[in-house]
Each structure stands twice: as C-alpha cells, then as structure tokens.
Image 1 (cartoon, rainbow, N blue to C red):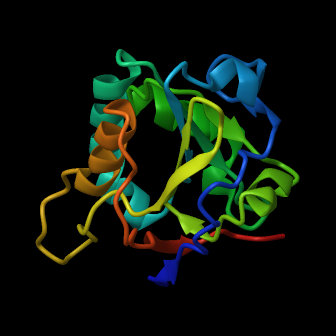
Image 2 (cartoon, rainbow, N blue to C red; image 1 turned 60 degrees about the vertical axis):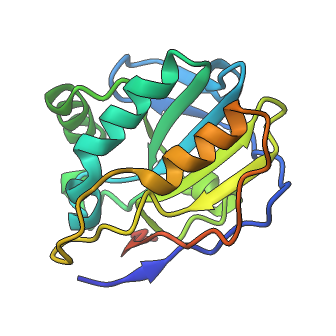
Length: 184
C-alpha cells in the first residue's frame, strides 16, 4: 500500500470552482451549490483505497456533526476508472448508499478538479471558510490502517471548531497520507 502525502495547497488559496456529476443524485452539482454558509469541506476519496476505507465511518460522523452547524461537505473521486474499475460512478453510488454518506459523492472524470486542488492522495482534506478561502488542508487525524490509533477525526474537527469559533486554524497542519490518486 503506497503512502503518498498531501501536497499542502497554500493557506488562503481560493477554492477552485467546479461542476461535477453527483453519483448519488444523478445530477451535476457546483461548488456554489455545495458550499456551506460557514465553511466547506472538500474531500478527495475513492472506493478501494485502504486509507479511505479505514476512515469512512468517521467521515460520515464528522459530516453529520458539522453539517447542522453550517458546514458544506463534498467528496470527490478522481481516479482513473479504466484501470481501477472499482472506483466507477456506479460503484461510487453503491458505496455512498451503503455507508450512508451525508454528502454528495462527485465523479471527476477528467481529473481537472483534482489537479486544480493539487490533490495527491486519498483521502485528502480541504477546509474553506465562508468566502471559500483555504484555512486547513491535511489529515483527518493520526490514525492509519494498522497503526493502532483510533480514528477520531481530531485534526479536521479541531480545524472546524476553530473556524466556527471565529479563530485562526492552528498550525502546523500535518499532510494526509494515503494512496496516490490514480492518474490517467
């Protein structure tokens, strides 16, 4: 299992705009439709990555906790589905429904959105404030498959709590570690 770190997009970067196919609703959704009034979390994930599988339950818990507080959430899969058919849109929808994702699961067929966010791995997390300026990027927490640390979402939760409290998100911010995005 490859261990690829996040590229750590510079803080203050404006969220790159997008409109992508939501595999669950069968419609196209834009960043503007997804964003929350107080902030927005964009996650790059996929179906087959053991790092994502390891944190899936916590992704659902974090989104369920913070959506009601004004945070928008979206997950994006940008993997090459020709070589990784388990990440196809049909199976993305199955995964989202089975796990009860409370956020859209978007398919980035051209991989342009992943490139615009400088995404490198799955999972990769970005938190933007109400004006879509980047305030956090990096890991969910310190848990990885096999390291014995419970999945808590502590790093992302801390960033969300600071944002909602009107405080600067603390640094240093640690890169996520996961499988590399499967580029075409």
